[in-house]
Amino acid sequence: MAEIEKKPIKIMETVLRDAHQSLIATRMTTEQMLPIVDKMDKVGYHSVECWGGATFDASLRFLHEDPWDRLRKFRDGFKNTKLQMLFRGQNILGYRPYGDDVVEYFVQKSVANGIDIIRIFDCLNDLRNLQTAVKAANKEKAEAQVALSYTLGDAYTLEYWVDIAKKIQEMGANSICIKDMAGLLLPYQATELIGALKEAVDLPIQLHTHYTSGVASMTYMKAVEAGVDVIDTAISPFALGTSQPATEVMVEAFKGTPYDTGFDQNLLAEIADYFRPIRDEALESGLLNPKNLGVNIKTLLYQVPGGMLSNLTSQLKEQGAADKFYEVLEEVPRVRKDLGEPPLVTPSSQIVGTQAVFNVLMGERYKMATKETKDVLSGKYGATVKPFNEEVKKKVLGDNPEIITCRPADLIPDEMETLESEMAQYKQQDEDVLTYALFPQVATDFFKYREAQQKKVDATIADTENGNYPV
Ligand code: CO
Image (cartoon, rainbow, N blue to C red; front, top):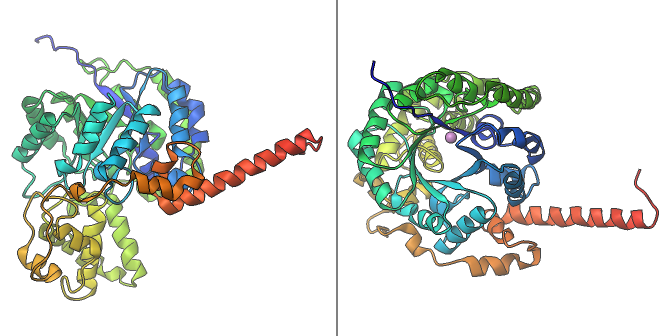
């Protein structure tokens, strides 16, 4: 047998970001994470994903934590491991597109506070929506990783993925991620896709998938054999189900092969021991729904992300129309086609899902269109892979609609100055203006909470100095 060249597979650990976002609604606190950082730092992970995505919103809104402070604490603790974040292109970590100056400043501050790798994606895979963030990451000397939202459909041929990967290389990205948020990539398709990408571009390729449909570890194995450079896994107590394949399992599976990670299973076991009680507690409190831990074969059947299925169920329940579930599920791919067949990921998954619900419940397609549907059809989110359904577009937008064909952010004026003046009274650190930019109301509530806490501490100190020790 010919000697196979050694190529240890690299691993990104997701427990501090995607795994708890996927399983327990992003509710892990900084206090729960910090005690294990030291051990995690010794594993030899390619990177630890620990910031961005929904963590920013959730720490402010539900945990009353300053996300910047969390990041700085990670940076202090992880002395040898790269820190990675997930970034929604022009939407940063929020839900609307921002001016370029906000995107640039956010990237600058993320890197200054400790981020090494920024994974940037757009729900339409419109690369123009990523361009500012990629340039900013280049400027800050961070790794700019462009993530392609993986999806199935007529438009998404091997040629499409190869072509867009080449464009990503040309735009100055340092690596490419295939981001399969729904767990749709099947093992043998991974062989084809990764093989084609490795042939087409020189950039490292990272694969991100979810266990939702049950195929993820097999997909990783095939992807590794096809030459993928990095895979995303979660330590076992926070693995499987709607999260990623388990780190220890993938490490063991490649042991003694050219892909051997060399990781210490005893160390991984200690890390798993640390996280297990946190998971058990979440199961007991109901924060972790056991349903999220099984295989959801419907995601393969309907080719929609698991999260979208549960959103549809609850939307229909609210309307007292739970019996319309399958009708809506059949309407989803039709709406998706009408809207240019976008990948289904935040926010396009919500836009397509809600419009499908409207179409079914109103008894007439597009009798009512949401503001977001109108915005997609008028180009405000960017360009889709396939053209829109012209008939639908006419019905929704009327005869002479205003259509955007340029990069949507070209129409957004710089906004840092306005934001600075709006929140000046709360500012305690430069980063506060970015927190405010993303979630004005939640940030203001947090700033007030923070001030109240500080006053409490001051009062306690004054009391202590007066001899009134708290008991
Ligand atoms: Co994910």
